[in-house]
Image (cartoon, rainbow, N blue to C red; front, side, top):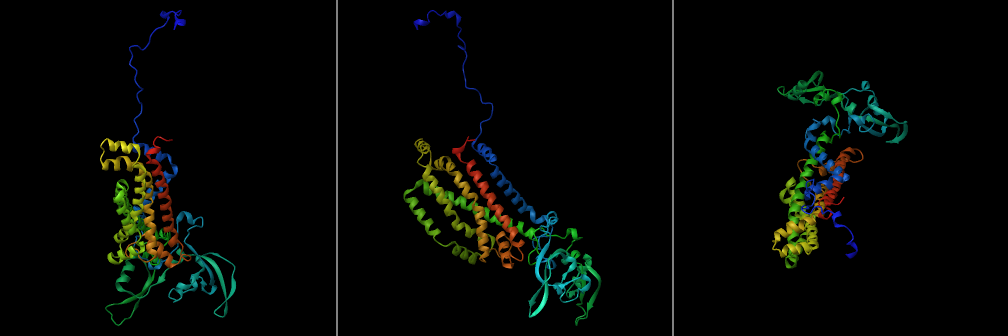
Length: 443
């Protein structure tokens, strides 16, 4: 210090001698656990996209059956197995209400003016006015004779909108058609033995019969099934039922699996040994056997299907939760909390479970599409719900009728299931990353 004695001390001035120094005050609010999770989830674009798709599907499952105006159970025998017709796409030649026919006998291709609607073979004719595309004619041998066949694209909507001759109908049925304005010309009264119960044959306008004011209103976005029911309404109604099944299974699976796995993994030892042996015995029973027994005892209804799926689905969740508890229960912060007198319930739900929440959420979110797929598989095996409609039942019905001839009966339900699977997967991965405490504050 002697080398600095030549410096004049009066040239220096003490500052902040009487000033108290504090840390700088935060100008923004502190972000909590869930706030940080939401912020990180929003930054994951693929997860947000999956969430948006899920929300749209759920909204459509609620309001979709009522948008088309055709009803879920309304049957139109004249309009059975109609192909899909979507107004915007039809201008591009996609989903335009046409169907391709191959190697059809040209003898059945006629003009409408050439055929009497009362002809018994009327429904077998293909009308020139409804043919939109035609390939080159060729000669083939059929039934030991030469016939001319042709491939063409046929407008089903034009054909089904043509007037047709009704079968014998009662007086009440005739009056009903007349009230709708669907009767063309004068009816033919059939003389019957019982004059008090007359029957008629009439020429019917099918559009007015089913409440369509014009051809512009006559379209089905997803086509119709074998009973003339609108597939658009049925697909969204089936989505609603399948989502309810998946949601019920997920809630019960998460609740039972988390509680069972937490107790087993936290206490370990004899408790874990006994609980795991019970779970292994239950998981060793084939799920199809459990499903069959439940359906036989409770019937093929919505509750029995969901209950059968729940009986064994919680085992996988409990095993995953158990492994996470074995991973975290020996950590220093858990031991410190136990030393300070924290109860078992606080250690489980406050210190261990939040750190295991990421894998739990991911697997839990995927339970819903897994349950929907399981329900679809059950429907294929004939054990699905007997009344009502679901995505699995629609797929089973479409496969039974014929995928190659009527692909739209399976394509649209398959698209919905695919979107559900992809969106749930993206959404689950985003929740896993957002709810992982170890990633809190990470950019």
